[in-house]
Amino acid sequence: MKTRPLYRILFNLWPSYRGGGGRIKCISRDFKKIKVKIPYSLKTRNYVGTTFGGTMYAAIDPILMVMLIKILGKEYVVWDKSASIKYLKPAKKHLYADFEISDELIAQIKNQLETENKLEIDFPIKLADKDNLVYAEITKRLYFKKKN
Image 1: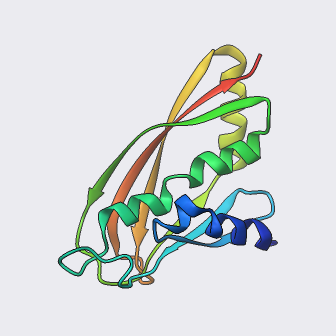
Image 2 (image 1 turned 120 degrees about the vertical axis):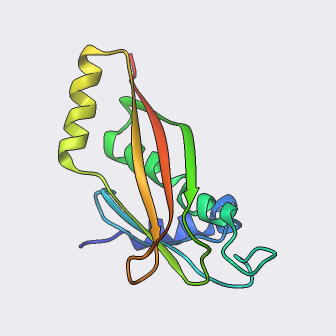
């Protein structure tokens, strides 16, 4: 996979993202794939020594919106609408999230916005360890609209 190392570095230096504790590990050239890591460290632990829920959410919060803005381009409005998180078990390990936007989804969004004024889509995200044991499930709802 061809990557965008400069975007990864800049994203990780962005103060509001950096402060949350998550780290972008890889961004594909076409922005259709992003890998995120949440290190288990003193900086990301809560009072009881597990990964802070706020860190989990902050690490994934901007990813889908930024991906879809980059993929769809300036003709479209993309906004985060809502989110929910379900904690399945306490984490004392590094956690990872893989984001992937398919060509089919992009086509679906563009086609629906030709006939509809706006669109909202739910995106499921799993935070898992390196053995794919899931610690949290997050659903992000994004809003789409074609600009006039």
